[in-house]
Image (tube, rainbow, N blue to C red; front, side, top):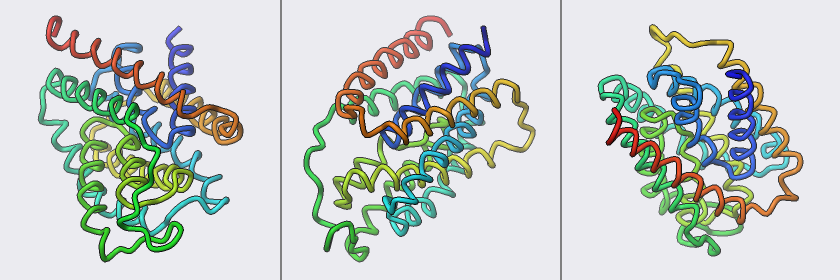
Length: 257
């Protein structure tokens, strides 16, 4: 039964990550903690491992089709690497209940971001097509990269729910390119966050392997058939699911732990 739940959770996260460029990973930690009974100290690095691998697999077809803005990804990744390490260090110092409460608040912010209208594309940093004027935009990209990196290390989330709207609204990058670029950034941040947990880390590698394999499969599936899915509608329904899970986590922290 445990393996079945693990496989289902991994597949769902991989599919959502592949379709939305982020957001799906927000369910990984609560799924591992409440669905599989894994301690938070193991759930966060396991989430980082699986999210990073599935994001990498999902990014490959985007790379091949030229839907990655590499310079943008580089700025986000470089600023996010030390922040992810700092987030990992902070996670080890905080009580699990406090970390879960903070995670629930991040989930609410993620759901609200998904419900927000994003029909427009920012132009302040765009010069031509997807070309970015870095003289104007580095001051915007670096703080977002730092924030996303810290959240990645602290909570084990990819941060795509912040990266995609930042790329679209702040830097003026088209959505299809933003999703591919987000997957590359999520891969880099997840890798740095996971490396920070390696010292003395003890994982159930059987569960981690099944989780990773099904997440990768889901990401590949989304990459192949994602064009047929109404992403906007999926994002709205997923936002409501996130609100429900966040309420459950808060209820557990306040009334049970």
